[in-house]
Image 1 (cartoon, rainbow, N blue to C red):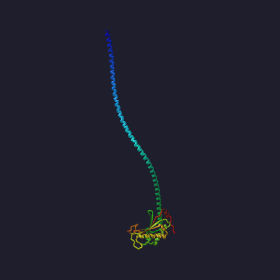
Image 2 (tube, helix red, strand yellow):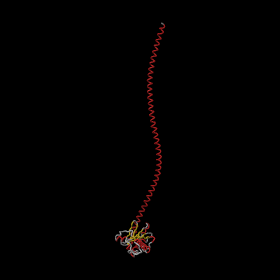
Image 3 (cartoon, helix red, strand yellow):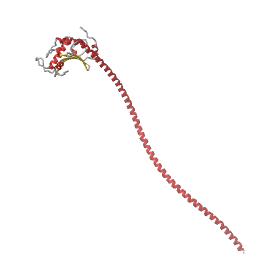
Image 4 (tube, rainbow, N blue to C red):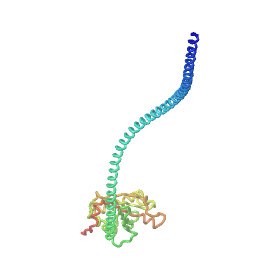
Length: 295
């Protein structure tokens, strides 16, 4: 009986303890299950984070590679620009030197152009003055020879040179080179204009037509005749009228410088002439404006 009294409470205590442990176990199981769920969730989140980090790392590595390439390209461009800048600076320096040299050259050229322009203007003025002096000489000569026929004596200016053409019929007989008395009067009037101008130099030229010379044996041909006629005029101007022989030259042109067609009688007559060519210097022309002195 006593045994029963002891056993029954013990069993009650056991069952009571078993009920309490079962509750705790179930609660632990529930907690474990919750922890398992949390662990699984954390594992999933961790795996997702690892995947994202791996993807981000790959993207960052790619971006790093791109940036490194960009930096390398930029460095190359910087080096290229530095090199070009150095070359450009050198070229600018060279251009500065060239520009300075060119500017100086242009300046000198402009000065030369100015000097040449001034010189040309001076020459033009001198030529205009010379032309006026030539005309003055022509007027003086025409005034000196008087009213002679223009076919017998022609005074003109051609390209700055004064020419006096005298027909051979005023100076010589046909085929002769001796000066006639009539010629002395004509040559004396020309000499009167030139006598007071001792610095003037001139040439006396003899000209013929193209008819072959037929005469005495002292003359070979037309060329020889033209030379002898020119020297005859020179001697008269020297010996009779006192012109300086050092300022006079004689030349024979023969038939080779005609002024007219030798196929006509009139043309032949025009070609048979003695020409006095006056080539005065500019300063000498001033004296030609002075009236000729009479003896």
